[in-house]
Amino acid sequence: MENNRRPETMARITTPELAASFIEEQLQAVRAQVGDKKVILALSGGVDSSVVAALLIKAIGKQLVCVHVNHGLMRKNESENVIEVFRNQLDANLVYIDATDRFLNLLSGVSDPEEKRKIIGKDFIEVFADEARKYDDALFLAQGTIYPDILESIEQAEGKKAVKSHHNVGGLPEDLKAKFELVEPLKLLFKDEVRTVGRALGLPSEMVDRQPFPGPGLGVRCLGAITRDRLDALREADAILREEFANCGLSKTVWQYFVVVPDIKSVGVKNDSRYEGWPAILRAVNSTDAMTATIEEIPYAVLHTITKRIITEVPGINRVLYDITPKPTGTIEWE
Ligand code: XMP
Image (cartoon, rainbow, N blue to C red):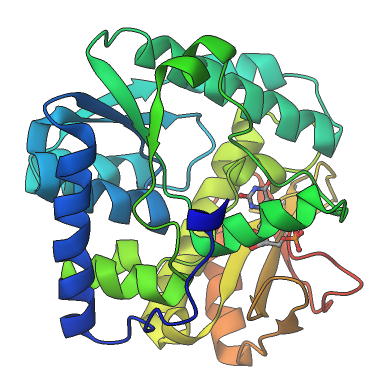
């Protein structure tokens, strides 16, 4: 536990120079730790796993095996971007597993939010573990653990209770736990420092400055039992929201913004005919630690553009609603 505590003397990494010296230290440390053995990493494309991947590619090149599992609940083009950046630009050893059918079949008919989270988390580990077992010469598992994760597990060990079971990648199966030694180069860093290190490693801003995205992905935003058509509608509406936030600059200032699609339909009209559809609910919140959140006041003109685009471009959606509930009482995600 001792080397999991950030020393009080450790300087905050706030500049490219400080990031460069942190990177240099970690390159040496990782090479010394892993020698010529392979290292496996579950690369979701989130900030933390992406920064670990970029750091390890620099340290050990193709000895790193990145495994990207697409659970079918990613945002539009997300897996494609991971492949583009890591395989095409950084020449990483990247295994891409499209497990969409497997996840959506397991989730079929499941409406309880905690059960959905559990299925996604457990299945994710199974898919990843099946892949990891294929590498006899991999003795190390890299993880994008950061300092707030360490603090959270200390709190959990002290018996503090969470509102939702957030932790997606719970325990690995025993055989892999016994086999792998962990490589966690970011474990003493706060999020802003991870981003500074990511920039210094040359990762693109879309990756380093990404908003938080839950491990179960769109699974907790496609409310109730997930169906492919509603999930597709959610993904398209979410892409429009993100595009319009980027167009008006809100993507640079708003902490988290997304679309939720509930499992209810209302009556509408399109081309003079009755058109029953789902509502798309817009959510845009500001926060510093996700424990509380305030609402971002989206300008009416932006809301209008987003609404117009969603109702014309997304099949199945016939209304757009704007959720202005702070946390508390509403959690950031609806499930
Ligand atoms: P809530 O909804 O509890 O969310 O206000 C707080 C923050 O956590 C994210 N979140 C999750 N992250 N796995 C995650 O990794 C999850 O199951 C999960 N649920 C919520 C949420 O997006 C917000 O940033």
